Every structure is written in C-alpha cells, then in structure tokens.
Length: 429
Image 1: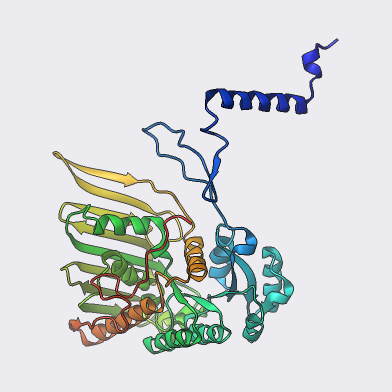
Image 2: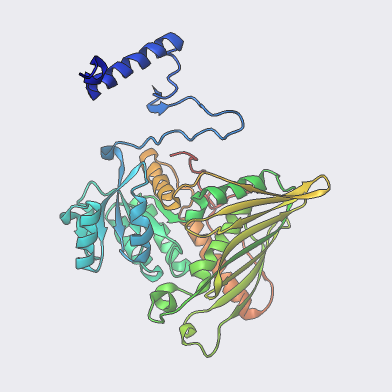
C-alpha cells in the first residue's frame, strides 16, 4: 500500500507549496517580493537579486496593450521589409502592424496572412485613399526604392497619416524639401529611419565621446563596404537609387559622424572611382572616399564601396583614448572596444551592452512621437541635411578641391549641436 503522501495529487502539492511560500513571505518580509515582483507606476518591478559584482538584470518589458498601440501601414514588401522590418513588429512595445501596401498582390496576401493583417487592409500602390479611411492606420512606413519615396510620402501626407520614411530620404535635396513641406502643410510628422541613431552601441559611442571619455576627439574613421552583383537590382539604377554606394551605404558613414559629434562639417574633400569596364557601374558609382572637417577641429575620414569585402566599422581617436565599434552599421553583431593607457600598459576593454532590435526601437520612437506629440529625433530636416552634404561630396569629387560647406538650410535648434535633430529618444521603451 502506498503511504498517504503518495496519494497527494500534483494539484494538492502545488497548493501546499504555494501556501508554504506565502507563509515564508509573510514571515520574512512580504514587503520585498523578490521573485514575484510588485506593480509600481503601471509596471511590474523586481528588486535586484544579483550580487554587486554582476550586472543587474533588465526590467521586464512593459508593452502597451494592443488596442493602445500606434497602428502602422508598411508600404513596400521588398527584402528589407520582409527580412527586418515586419519581424521587428514582434519586438515593438508601442506599435502594431495593421496594413500593407504592395504592388505584388499574391505576395501581399501571403504576408498579410503570416502577420495577421486583415485582407481588407491590404492595398496596391493606388490604395492610399483606403488608408485615409482606415482609422487604425496612424503611421505609414515607406520602404520603397529611394526614387519613389517622394511620391509615397506625399500620398501618405495627403491621406492625413504620419510618415516614417527609410533612408536615404529621397533621390535629391529638392525632393526632400518637397516632402518636408507636404508633411508640414498636412500637419503630420515626418521621421527618417536612421536606425543606427537608435541602436544601443552607436548611442554609447556618442555618449562616451561627447562625455569626454577619450579626452578631446581628434579623428574619426567610418567605413561601410560590401560587394554587389545582379545588375538588374534597383540600387544600380540612378533613377531609383539617386546614386550608388554613397546614398545607399555611405550615408551611414556621413550620418554616423554627424550624429557622433553633433556638429555640422565646414568643409569636404572627396574622390570617386568606378571600374570603367564593369557594367554594374554604368549609372552609379562604386567607391567614394570623403574627408569632413568639423568646427571643433575633428577630421572624419569616410569610405564606402560596392566593390570591397564587407566591413562596417566606426572608430574615434581622442587625446587620451580611442573607441572602435565593429559592425557599427550592421543589423546585428556590434562590438564596442575602448583603448586607453593603464599605467605602463595599453588597455583594451570590450563593453558588453544589452542588445535591442534597432528597427523595433526606431518604430517605437515614432509611435511615442505620435502618442505624445513630440518632434522625432531624426525628422525630415535631418534627411535634407544629408542630401545637401551628399550633393556637396559629389561636387567636391568633380572639382578635385576643398569645398566650403554652408550651415544647415533648415535648423531646428539655435545650436551649437544637433541642429537638425529633435529631442533624444527614450532609452527604455
């Protein structure tokens, strides 16, 4: 015969255990719910249980209820949308995917089913009027080729929707101005998707550099390269891309050093090279190298190419130390390394930071701006400034000399730093 204890059901044991834990909590300090947490200011919080030599754990996510999240329509279902942006909605806390716009009906139908988008919220590129009639859609995220951005942003603004637009903002500064004006006239927000300005490691490099961790910064090097094939892709067609390596991947270098210093460059020198016998570069450039000088004296050397092995690195040399950020402009895999003197030794310290999906962070920032009526950190004026600087880089390469640069055309602040940026994004969603 089994004894009485073996006759206890699993449920009885669980109830008994729960009662014991409750009694222990009451006896040893119920005011400190170490492993059950407590609700404070609308969030569940836990006390830090780790010892002083370990990093404290991150607080649990606090996503908004689905009905309170900002609804997004994604326009364009190409590689970036399907591989990065749509999956990122699974990690957002303030945004939700509610509509799709695509020129491929079969693909749109399949993707809608995969992500739970209602069939009636799937449209072709002529469907912006339907977006206007859909109150669930508050933001339109434009992820089409660069040369189509202007028309799609104008259509979204005319539909009364806020706009998040992929970088580069357009195919020219003239188009960028038109987009800013259209959104202002419609009374909607315009944000450019400079994802690296929301990425944890890039933000830490900026914080360390501006905070004096390296002494006075002197030199910056930014390199973003990859190799290309398939001549039929849109990035190699000037009408759709607006240029080659510079606006596509070199823009990360340009925008990255501007965001890092907070300054605007005062002069530029540049060189461009494309293999004359390579059909890939009949319309756009392969390689661009440019040097920017900033008011503080910082010199930034930037290099980008469609013809060199993939490298995405940002480094800062200061008077008392240096920083290297490997995979700085990649979707993942960032590694932040600090270099400094330690007595008679040269110390090399790697900082392990929490990893967050940078697409989710930029989407949530846009959602916050809509919910709280904020100016985005990377508004249209930030995109316009990069277009003006890219046009100056092309001109400097043509002339072969040093080109003096003008101040930003449409500053949002009086200065001296971050003239074309809105307030800093929240660090925690």
